[in-house]
Image (cartoon, rainbow, N blue to C red; front, side):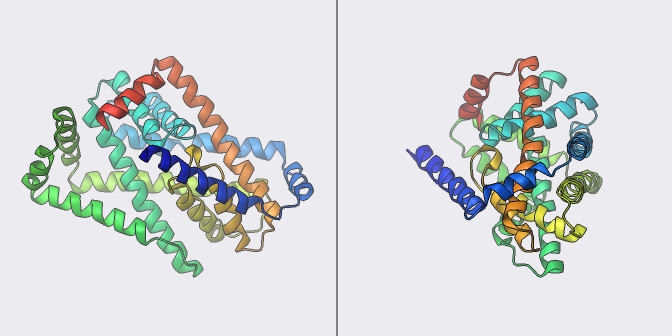
Length: 316
């Protein structure tokens, strides 16, 4: 029942966002805006999309302590991103863990620790970029829930680093032995990274990854959509769209992503039809290649959807 209610609320959010994005749209103008996009420039943007996965790839190599080859790390990044477009988010991340386990033999706890560090540092990056953008552009962005979430995790890590028995005691209260062992394995792997060099290197890779993502949005808006925006304005669009995608919605945030782009571009005088054309195209050139690539990797690696769902139900 709870799962049904959750899906109803997610669909309602996505549907409401989509209605906002298309409300009052002149579809002839929208079509004309789409037709003006140069195929050559679209291909350049698409090629740049593949390059920007490299910082995330080397972040995986670092988190695997050099056990993962670059090609395996790159495939795991594409697999996670692509499956998150069509499946609930935790299944995409779980597929990444399964893939790395099969290729380099890490434990489930180690894999979940890698995913934790990735997502946690990504949240820190979004928070910092969002706060800086809101200050410089004097825009009100709803960052308090993200701040509370990130701050809570830092407190947890601090407690675990200084007083590990406190967290260990809480883990022992978990009723399921399997979940208890998994949590212990994951926490042990998290504790291995508690030193300044780890945080500095991980922070550096995360900075490069988010610089690449934001520059991709700027490149698309400047090269393909031909909008006269500064990098800071494009960064605002990027931050708002990222915050929109962080909301619990449908896989791939279809509808929500478009609404966030239309809203933020409207701040800088971009018409709704032009903004929606940019949002749809920007979403699709990120969505289609990664989704197709993830399905291919999934088939070639022998990871099954049933396997992911059973593991998710039993262990997460």
